[in-house]
Image: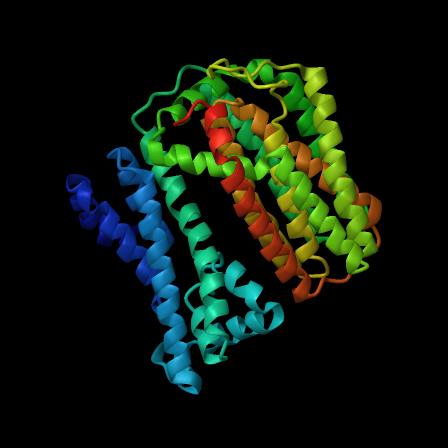
Length: 442
């Protein structure tokens, strides 16, 4: 790792002096990262983070960088697909695959087991990212289907690759006030304990594992609801930091993201999910999903009334309701966690863990949008994530204690995913202007 850092150090020293080349460098780094075989040995994730960090420090706009990252990932995957379609069985004779045949074997098992979904999820698994598109071309996957999946997975992955580094770079010039780091470390320790416990419990077949996870999450949630007055330094500094990142392009992105947690949209998405589970006669899955979604909503209303925390006074018109927990965060985290848990039913624990981590990505973007739009404090959205996790874990302990439901067929996920996407797009087009006016934008 130190040798690699020394090798690329002159490049990043030069980019620090010539920040107008950062967009091009991010494009090229991701293009190589997503190119067949080369990406396996290319430290693209580390390099993208470093370049994005420099871009954040230089004050470069996020929107063009994210667009370039998406385009590079899309083109890299498409080139790999075309290479696989052209070479067919000759792929096995490529020099790198002759030396490491297990790479192609693992990707082939992944693709045959999970179909088109493996292309989407495999984009977030480093060793599979540069191999699966080539294998899809070799196995004659439909070009239209590949382009659709590639466009979605490349877009989401590129955001997850660029945003952390860019935010870190933008934050480096600011000095936290006294008391920030102890509060931040306390929250990091609590969530770290939850994540480690969740991974450990997910590996075991202990019948009470879901109840234990619900208990731990519930205790952390209660501590957050009772202890937020002692976390206000963390809240104020982080909110000011995020507000300092505002731009016109980011305003539009955050308005779209925040609508993903809107109560009206979530009612439609939740109803669609439950209706499809009913039509497919997935009784246990339906009970789990309905209990998780309804339980989170009811508990959110109860905790809001009990805690009665006032929202940030930064908008010209005060939003309805109290602040903690964030309702948008609760709804987004619960919905995506339910989807990830249902998709991972009866799968290996490694895949289940990965799916849950992936589900937290869009939900975390919704949570970020709530702080960015000054509708909530940072601890509000963290409490929302805990409440969603608690509701899902409790529902699992009630209905999936002794056995997991059978995995749902691919047709179910294709129907649910495509209809949900159409509903979301139509909802955003219908409500965007009203949402922008509500948050005093444009």
